[in-house]
Image (cartoon, rainbow, N blue to C red):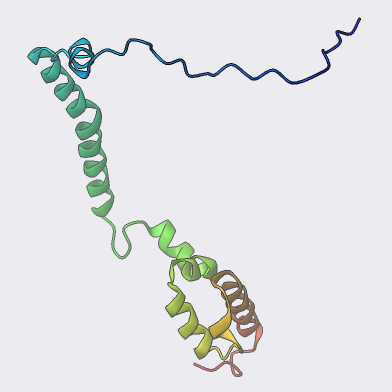
Length: 141
């Protein structure tokens, strides 16, 4: 069975904020919420934990990065360096908008100054792919 709603004027909703009829003075409210200081030993323990969980892993990571530098000539991370030479998207992603526009000007892309970054990158990739498809004797240096 469905319950029927009463017809007629809608009763007002009760106010969610109830006002205290006898508000206490501000001095009494401040004394009730005083904070207790932490013991000195607990503060020192938190400091030690911060050193163990934050600084020690950073030192370990720094030592590992120093190990990568030894015995390598050229780039510190050779896999990334070779990917940068092979994949033009990586080079374009690292360039700023001004550098992209200078490259577009050098590649003679029409309307490069009004293009947004994403559209400019697409146009540059198309032009670079087209240039790579040309025979070597037709390419400009």
